[in-house]
Structure formats: C-alpha cells, structure tokens
Amino acid sequence: MKMTKFFAWLAIAIGIIYFFVPLLGTFEFSLRMRRGEYSFDSYGSVFSDIQFQQTFGFSVLMAIFTIVFGMLLVVPTAYWVRLRLPQMRPVMEFITLMPLVIPAIVIVFGYLRLYNSSSYIPFTGSIFGTNVLLVMSYITLSLPYMYRSVDTAMRTIDVRTLTEAAEILGAKWPTILFKCIFPNVMSGVLSGAFITFAIVIGEFTMASLLNRPAFGPYLQLVGANKAYEPSALAIIAFAMTWLSMGLIQLVSRFSKLTPSKA
Amino acid sequence: MSFLVLDSIKKSFGPTQVVKDFHMAIEKGEFISFLGPSGCGKTTILRMIAGFETPSDGTITINGRNQSGLKTSQRNIGMVFQAYALFPNMNVFDNVAFGLKVAGMAKAEIATRVTEMLKLIGLEHLAERYPYQMSGGQQQRVALARALAPKPQVLLLDEPLSALDAKIRVSLREEIRQIQRQLGITTVFVTHDQEEALSISDRIVVMNAGRADQIGTPSDIYNRPATRFVASFVGTLNIIDAVVADPAANTIRIGENVITLREPIAALKAGDKVSVALRPEAGSLSESAKGDTALTGTVVSSHFLGSVVRTKFEVGGNQISFDMFNAPDKVLPQPGETVTLRFAAGDLLLIRD
Image 1 (cartoon, rainbow over the protein chains, first blue to last red):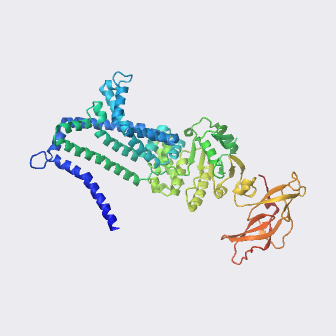
Image 2 (cartoon, chains in turn red, orange; image 1 turned 90 degrees about the vertical axis):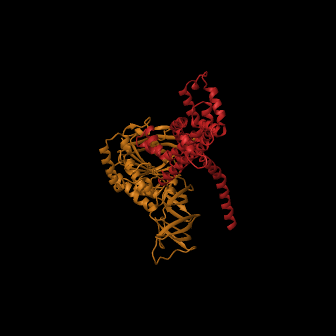
C-alpha cells in the first residue's frame, strides 16, 4: 500500500518537473533582460511594441469572428443531426475529425489552389477576402472541438421532446432554436468558444501562408530576432491558454449547478 | 358532429403498419384514454393528432376543421409529455408563459393568465423556481399548466404519470381529472396502466396491434370485454376453455360441469370449442351450490395477498383463480380439497378471439 502511494507521488513529481521546469526556466529567463537583476522589462517591451498590439488585436478579432460564425454553423447542424438525421452522426463525426488528421499546411495549400486570385472564387484577391478565408480556415481547424463540445451539451438535454414541446405551444424554428435549445447548450457553446479562442490566438501556419498580420507569425518573428521577448511572449501565450481553460472549467461547473435534463 | 374525429387513420413506418384503419369520434369535453401494451400504436395516434406524425391515410378533424396540412404549431393543441419537457433555462412563470408569449399576448394579460394557471395547479408560490429545483410531480403540474395556458382546443397527455412514484401518480391523476372537468377540455390520455385508465376516463380505447379492440366505458371494458385480448389485458381474468354442449339451450361443458350462458350460442354447433371468461372476484365458495352456475374442481394452491386470498382450482384442464376477502378466522382451502365456485349467470362471458 505504502509502495503504491510512493510510486503515485513519484509519477506526479516527474510530471510536475517535466511540465513546470521548462516553464519556470522560460519565466526566469524572461525576467533577466536587465543585467544583474530580475525585472519585467521584457514584458514592458512586448506590451509597448505596436506590432504586438496590432497582431494581437487582429487575432482577437479573427477569433471572435471564428467563434460567432463557427457557432452559427455548428449549433444548428448538431441540433438538426440530433433531431432529424441521427443516422448521419457517424458521418458528422468523421467530417469534424478531418482537421485533426489533415495537417494545417495541406489545408492552406488546398485553399490557395482553390481560392487564389486567378480562380473562380478569388478570396485571396483582396485583404477582406483573405481575412474571410482565414476565418473559414480557423473554423475548419476548431471544428473538432466546437462540434464535440456542442454535441456533448446537446446530449444532456432531451432535444426532441423540448423541440416538440415548443412546437406544440406554437413556436416556430427560430424561437425553438434561440430560446429553447441554444440557452440550454450554452455551457458547450462557451467551452467551444474558449478552446477556439486559444487555438486561433496561437495559430501560425494558416495566418503565415495567407500572409495576414496575426499573433502567431508575430511570435515567430520575435523569436527569430530578439532574446528575452520571446520568453515573455511564451509566458503570455501560456497565461492566455490557461485563462481559457479556467473559463471552460468555470462554465462547466456553472452548468453542473443547473442541471438541464428535460 | 363530434368534436374530434379520427377517420380511417392508417400509419406505416416503412413496411410496418403501426395503425390499421382506426376510427373514432370524441365528443367535446370527453376524457378518452388509449390503453394498450407498448408498440400497439396508441402513442402514434396521439402524435398524429398533435401533428408530429402525418397519417399515411385518413383524416383527423377537430371542431369541424380538417387538420391535414396544418403544422403542429397551428393546431392549438396542448400536450403533456412523459419526460415533463419543461424548458430548463426558464423558471416556472416563463415556462407557463411561453405559449402565450409566442402567441403575441400582451404582458399584463400573460401575467394574469399565468397566475390563474399556477393557482389552478396550486403552485403559485413556486413561480420563480427552475425545473431542476422541483420534484417530478411539481414539474408535471407545471407542464400541465403550460399546456393549458394558451386555452387549447384539445389536451393530449402522453403517459404523463409514468415517471412518477406510485403515491404521486394517484393524487396527480385525480387532480388532472378534476382540472379537466373544471375546464371542460377534450382530453386524450395515453397510458399502459389499466388502473389509471379505468379510474379517470369517460371512455377507454383498448388498442392491440394497431387496432382498437374495444371502445367503451371503463365499466364496459372491465365487465364486458369484447375480445380475448381485452379480457386478458384489463384486470385479472380466467380464460376457460369449454365445449358447446347444447347450442339451443345455450349450454357449455367445462370438465364435468354443464353451464348455461346468458349469451346465445345458437350459431355454434355441439362440440365446438369456445372460450369463456370469469373474473376472480366474481364468484364465491359454496358447499351447497350445484347446477348451471357453479364449477366444481380440485384446489391447486391458495395464496394470501393481504386484503384477499387467491385460490386456484382445476376444472377440466383449466386452472381457475378466485378471490375471497381476507378475515382473521378465514380457513383457507387446502390443495387437493374439492370446492364449488358459485357465480351469477351473467359473470361468465363468451370471448371472441
């Protein structure tokens, strides 16, 4: 019994060392910008960099569009598949898992071939079009997480009976979807939104190859040219991801307090 | 013309026909129960009235208006579901108000109507509660209030008591019946629980394999079952195999006993096999009784069931159960003992298959 406990603690200790030592090292290094003493100079340098503000702002905007349009695509689809086309669920699972299997670089090259400025749908012919394409590519990337979180939330409510109950009370489709279904899968929607935010903020391949001024390419640029700022940026990126994960936990805990079984 | 008419309704799912040529006319204010085992088509008929399913053939008319082509949301029907189906994101007030808001009613009118409905179900003090903060019985009351709030022309109840415990079930069914009488609303109730159907219905439809085996008052259904299925499904019943003795004299033979039936059997021939039914509570033991309304046989077993004692005895290859009220000084019939069961001529019913 004691030996088992010892090995359990040993495993935890190894895990903590593996994950936290590099992080602590990075953090410690990010504080060394001022010679001979610790300081937050590198963070100050990052935050005052106009490029940081621009790229971060751009990525946040892209993330918001990705979340809004992604959810407008995913929630009705997941709802419809649950309600009317349950036999399509394996197909949906397969489609939504594709972005995990196909590398982002393959997807973006596919986009560039299909939507270049000399194609029938020349998305890359304008900045606006390229931004639209970037949002669409982010929606594709985050599809596995968005679909799963929404579908899991829908599993906790009796979608069919709630729909029928609303229908017989005279409600039409928009009312049913936005007043009876959407609020009851909000925890899933928010979980999907936070994970999407975390993905979009750090994404490099799509933004770089579509030549958009996003936060991912900026991280790479700073990493290649500066010494202490990349470490500060890595810590900032970690902090944002953890904040998103914390918010997911908070949202799921909140939804546990208000069970939504029909 | 009747208020709700189901005319030649058929429904198939792929190659399976689940409702077969169903006719029924329901009067305004009637409380009708559809009773039958799982898969007999009762819920499908209810869902066709609601508009969730479209009949493969036939028409449904409510208050003289053909419902074909009308969407569920256009039918003005209230429905209570087995799983309550309250909207988890809304409190009791908002749940009850939902149908009224959808109908575009003014806020003040909604508040008045919701309060009226909550008073009707005795839950006006829980208006701010959410569904997860209430018991099953309370949730189902709210579901009833929500269904009634928009003043529907028909109320459909899809096994609304099945998910509740026994005590709540009894009190809620009485409450539902009382509210239905008070509002005079035409109600269709689906259940597989015969006691529920017998206790609250004006008429019962006993469904079997997509057809109505019998439509009648609870008393008719229980005392005069039309088919072997109805007889076996509703209550406990002895189905006894007999042979026609003399068709002209309406007599049949069960073992060595010759019994006179009240129903004429002149159309049958002597020696034809028939089935007759006898309720366990219909007879009583008698030492002296002999003749054409008594069965004599050998006791197989006696079981004490609390308020009654159920005894099985064998006559001509049939095992027949009969019930006696329990009393402290009651001497139970012992296995092997010969007993004679006396009953009224009308208690023995000829059963059609």
